[in-house]
Image (cartoon, rainbow, N blue to C red; front, side, top):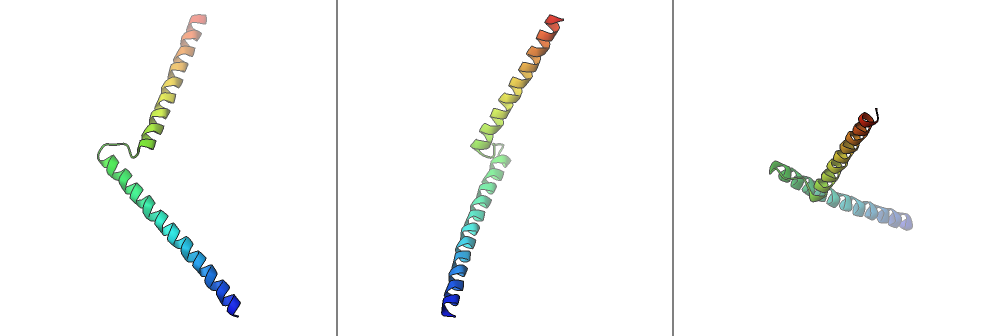
Length: 79
């Protein structure tokens, strides 16, 4: 019976440690989200990483449009 209780207490301790870790992660993510909101309210990008990803996507989109335009010009010239 004592071993079973010790095992149960040990398992409970593991669950408590996991719960504390998850609560800390949740607090950190809430703080990060709040920082993103403040940045956006001030007209800034939410984060530097998000800004870089946005700029990368914009460059890719611009490149696709330029490529389409070149294909259209070649098509007009050939016909």
